[in-house]
Length: 131
Image (tube, one colour):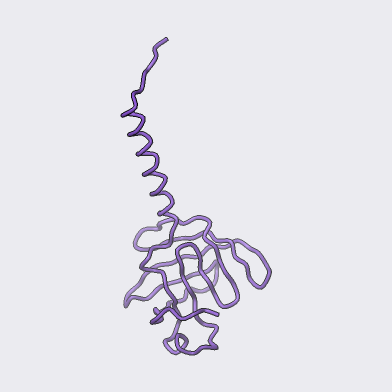
């Protein structure tokens, strides 16, 4: 039987590698910073306080007027697109869904929730509240 003896420097190197990989895996689960902020289909929806047309994209959550979706898994689709498997709460109802996000021309955000039509959104200045 062959025995391998691992010295402390090698153990330290493996521990550092494992911690680096774990940190990278955690960071990979965040929605990219360039996509975060408050978005709306039209500029006037950004500045109308009673509007229900704003969407907030955060690192691990997408918030609509009446629902919150928490990111469970995030995958890079390539070409700037991301697919988030989400757990949503909508007025007391709980369901799972899929949100696809992609930055498109003009600094806009393309957002598709489940089988709904794709929305092309513009960024709201100052990140106004969704609710």
